[in-house]
Length: 171
Image (cartoon, rainbow, N blue to C red; front, side):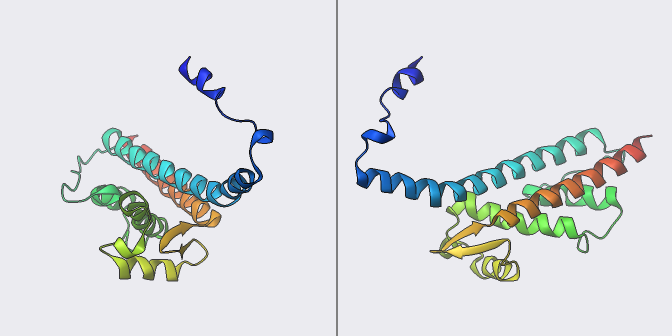
């Protein structure tokens, strides 16, 4: 009910000054797409971590413990390695997600500001290695559309692999 009343307070575009119209046009053309990519990426990352947890909880016949010292996806490293029976250092999707975790951490913990990172060199190196996925603009990490899409593909790939292996071991 409160929201409906507040909506009435939002001015119609026709009532805005030319200066305000230019401002909002800039916001929607420049900031909105970047924020949408970041939000989508962060939401996908959160869902992926939840999926890893659910897979670990439901399909873990060897009762593999989570790495208590790990954070993010690294706490599931032993589970992933054992379930996929592979060297995850050579696993393409895992490496992409591991790189994406560094981007995620910079967006969440330092608002993407590279100069505030404790791992500035590593973050810069990652971005230089993947210019089609990430860039730095005004000292902030930015994801490209391809960066979000690449992450989504890596998540789908490793999730399907884990689920298929887990279901086979469950049978």
